[in-house]
Length: 291
Image 1 (spheres, rainbow, N blue to C red):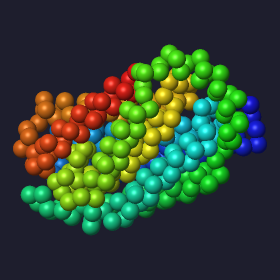
Image 2: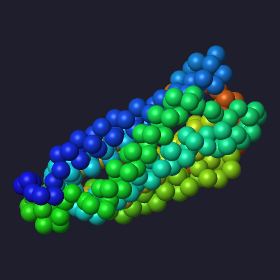
Image 3: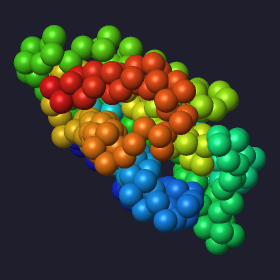
Image 4: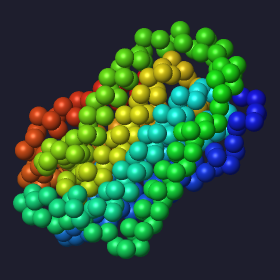
């Protein structure tokens, strides 16, 4: 893309830093919520933390894509930037609430009641990072760094050449349907346990907080639905992020089956049909995002 007054290298850098910072505090909160609970269950807790880290590719994909848009790289248009920014901002605000209200949101009784209370320093850092990121996203949402004409000139010829190659392989309807499914998964975080633990299986200690990244996934899929058939470099981070999250999620599922007993997952066993359905959705997403 040709540099213009609407590109912003500083904003691009800010998004890259935001992605790293968000990933860091989410990983720290996952460790604080899961690794400290019954610490003698090393394998179980390690699997839970690994499951939570499936959100990291989603965070990276969103941040990298917004940074690319800020640099004026195709194929991102203002509506893409606004939607991704809104999704990232929504996930960040959700995370602020999840950290501040952790004792209340994790107080459900599933065999026992052990609400999460983050250490003061971690709570302060996590809230600060998520708040700043939400403000950054809102700024970008209202002042997107690209104009339609800027993107069209750079990407139209690529679309013409590439659309015939992948048309019918990745369809817009598939991404739209999957986006709806992930939006439903995000809403499940507001339902009572045990259903609230679907599809993350992170239990009462982190499932509600994880809903933020399911919301972000739904938004990313909606954005990808407008760019099917575009093997452009700027699309790759978003697609890789979605695919990476699914691979980790399904990989952890296999590890659970091999290393653990179902007795350790009473919440999942109580709503097994919903859990199985969620895995089928993830498998479908893996197939769509890999083509």
